[in-house]
Image (cartoon, rainbow, N blue to C red; front, top):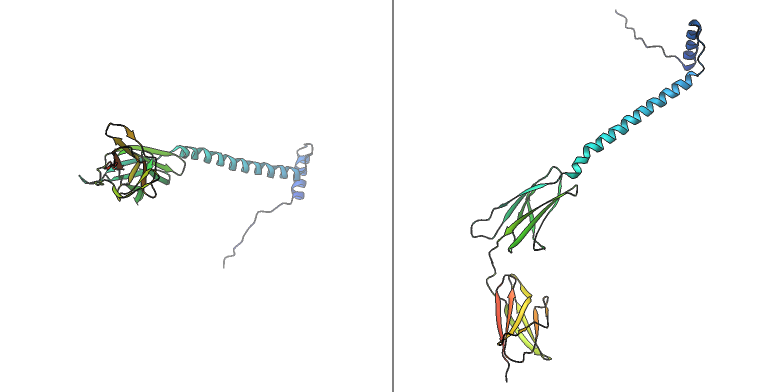
Length: 240
């Protein structure tokens, strides 16, 4: 039966190693070491720790330099009109980005347009009005990409606003209106006398849907548009 032997390297204590070093110096006729071995060992450990820390610090610096380019990576996008001929415009936006996309927004003439996410970095925009469509894609590193598209949207609102009722109070004419499609453009309302003189409303209230004109001195033509350009014409007749 074979015997198995295990061997271990002998371990010297600091005192034994120091004595051995002194004996070697004596044999070699070399002056004895004036620095204790414990001090040399402590200094060696200190140097090793500093070396490890420097390697760790250099690793962090290299990682930072490698990550810096990612701070300036911008997304890109493609826009395709996917609407059928004769239908309202519909755009499919595909965003390409190495980093996560945080948002995609769209505006026409500074008015927000709804954006619907239909897939992974794929979005759909269905503008209801014509104008310059500005699409912006933002990524997680605060970089963004903008694309502009000229939109020519067919009008879907074919009907002019309707007069619900009118009232005369304190020398003023109140006109209550309705428009269930694009909405009334109160700021565009005006009146014209037969001689061409223009009269603007005294005030309007878009939440309660009424306009106020001063009671005219003679027959007055009043024009009220909706946001799709359909015009309601009214005539205020003055009884003489």
